[in-house]
Image (cartoon, rainbow, N blue to C red; front, top):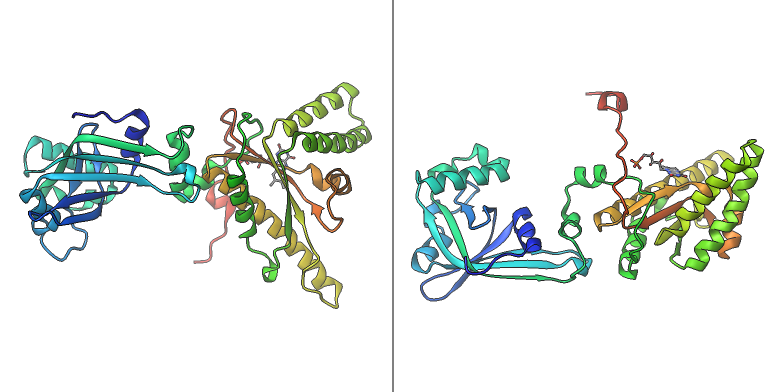
Length: 355
Ligand SMILES: Cc1cc2nc3c(=O)[nH]c(=O)nc-3n(C[C@H](O)[C@H](O)[C@H](O)COP(=O)(O)O)c2cc1C
């Protein structure tokens, strides 16, 4: 291979589930199709598989093109609305058809089946496999800072997203950009809510001065509560210092506030109370949207309940309107360490089934 893939490009190619494969016919007419492929660090392999096709695999346009003109290209691209995460890798070289029963064909089929379980049930071993040997490699990354992990996270399937999120309590000092913050708030706003009333507002804090003011104010209230519990002075001081450090050491704080002003109004107290409960429930959904979106964007988050115990203190410290009721404090940033993963209850404990 004339060019080498650098480390990030190699990981992107290795991890991609789909790529675009380009060939031309004898007249130079371009042809491009999305393909599943496997990469063995020197060549890319594409099966002629049993996905529904209009013609026999060996009559496919891409196969006829390769026989007429073996010059081909494979483009692995990643798209995300967070444009720092754009990236692509292009492999250009010669494509050949690996004949059935050759050693390389056998190895390519095994590699494809390892990557795509769907191929285990398809007779791909009975068809030639396309092999592309790159001679020229080009790659482009929108940001030099992002790791491959951060680039590919947005394409996580749900188990990786939902299980991957966990409460992080320590962050690096890397700044969370405004573009990211806006996506998080928008994600919060897409949560379900009673009658679509969107009973939430968010205080977004990145200012060190405001974080300090908030930590001090909540600290006074917490000290009062701990003293009421009869906690030892030294223990109180330690806990307060930790809580303060946590707030000050968080790049981004989002305070979801309950906003009841636009809820439906009922003549009876019971329905009104249910309406308020629904609004509180939907604040939780909005917070989870924010935490999952943060994770999908390569960040992490944590949930701190402190504002719920001193909403007036938070309102005063932030100068919020009094009809914004602070319900939680979400810490967001880039994790300084991998936190422990708390195990979850088994399914049979979680659900009762009516089938
Ligand atoms: C309503 C609510 C309040 C929470 N309050 C706090 C808190 O004040 N401090 C904290 O460190 N974690 C808090 N958490 C986070 C939980 O401790 C955490 O979600 C739980 O231990 C499971 O861990 P995981 O999120 O990593 O899966 C809170 C979570 C929820 C849903």
